[in-house]
Length: 157
Image 1: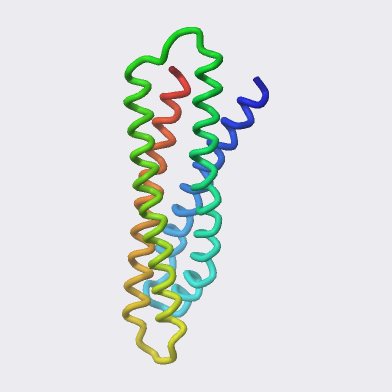
Image 2: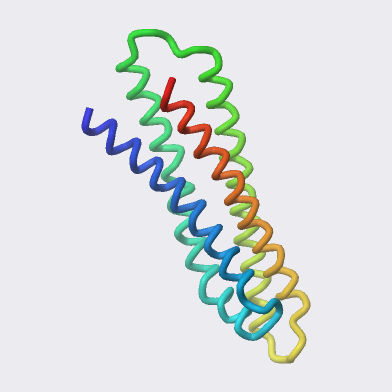
């Protein structure tokens, strides 16, 4: 039982960290004047770290999710209800969408860093990539929140 609880909490913690880092970036970027030097400096410092953290959580979530499914399947005395598989399928689809958005956010970060590394006062491409990064992180946070709520439902079945 203890191992099952540890795997479950690692799974939940990874989801919360992924959602929390993205939401924190969006909130912080929204609090700073857009397209200012401070806005750019914040993004250059924070985005690579957030992406590295999120890669780790994104890789851990399916492993711990599978572990949870195996553990619950072994300890259950009755079969899973059909709604369980419907919700689980929805969570997998949301996870796939979040993974695609994470890959897109890494591409946006690379484009942002490349443009900001160039000398010159105008950084339209970098600012556009940063705006795209903020939108992607916002979408990841929203999708992750839905997945966490669905996870609560799954835990109750």
